[in-house]
Image (cartoon, rainbow, N blue to C red; front, side, top):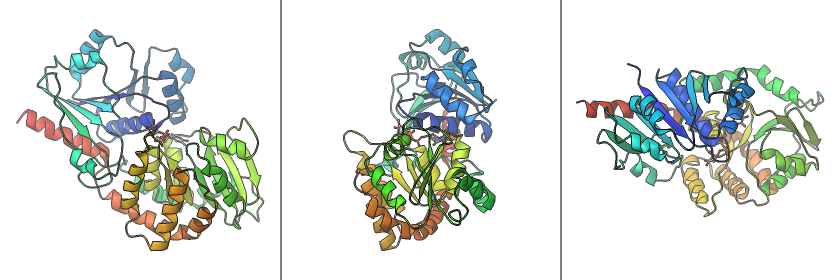
Length: 402
Ligand code: TRH
């Protein structure tokens, strides 16, 4: 019988949580042939995200629907607040083999109540945020005793960059897709054409993408791009990153399709695309500024030079996470390249002046390019997150039914 996995996702303020859950759900269905129900609380935010992923999908219909949506083989359900516990017990929890509580979203009390009465073994996985910190390996796979049925086992599952962690999301064909996109000269040319550059400037522009949070560093980086010798095209998807672009160009209400120019810089505003189209953009650009968790990981699979704008936390702990990643990522890099990357990354994340820092980093892009390729290969040796989750459940089942 096909196993049933139930994922709970709370959309906080961006698309990171749903981005990861949606990607994972699709992979569990498409590659592992599981039945997956994805419960999401913020229905309007979800429908905006899913309509970017599946253009055929009618957003208006969803908002007026019975709160169930099928997309790419995944059953997406609205996480009702307050929960209707009887309905849940009969229809869902009792038949689940695995429940994933994504990013500490805290299961509703009614679900926990339902877990008291299950009649078959059930694995409850707390899927945590990604971190390169060294404690992750020690905490990955730890169990957390709960006051529910003895048939239920709760485990902390940590994604990570090293053996001994839960790994990273990576579809089976992802590395090949990047290789394919990067071999297609016409795909890169199509991107360049979006900027409408004069033929002479089209010769060999530097292509960069920007998907970041607000930072005063942006203006200084744009200044550096404007004064470059080589033409540069910066692709910016609609969303938070556009605010800084709008104020830099003293304009408002930018929409997808807009093109702005100053000096060597041309900015192209892109629509919020599907995850796959965004992967392709990362693949074709020479340098990507990414953020959060999912785009950060995808930029690494694209094997292109990248800088990570980490999700800022009030207590500043994000800088520790950034340092931990750097320690892994920069290993094996030549000193000059390492210094330039570190300085720009730090400047960007601390909101400092990045103008000179960019002028130091740019000549190192070819060194960073070969490093990015090696890093991609190193990560790709490890099993991916979805496979690790499935293997974990197989072992759990075996131990529950020896
Ligand atoms: O949206 P984010 O800032 O998400 C963040 C982080 O995940 C953070 O850890 C979390 O705490 C916070 O949200 C609440 O950045 P992230 O993680 O890159 O997620 C963006 C998703 O949007 C990702 O799945 C890629 C996807 N995306 C598209 O589908 N199309 C696009 O055009 C773009 C630019 C992104």
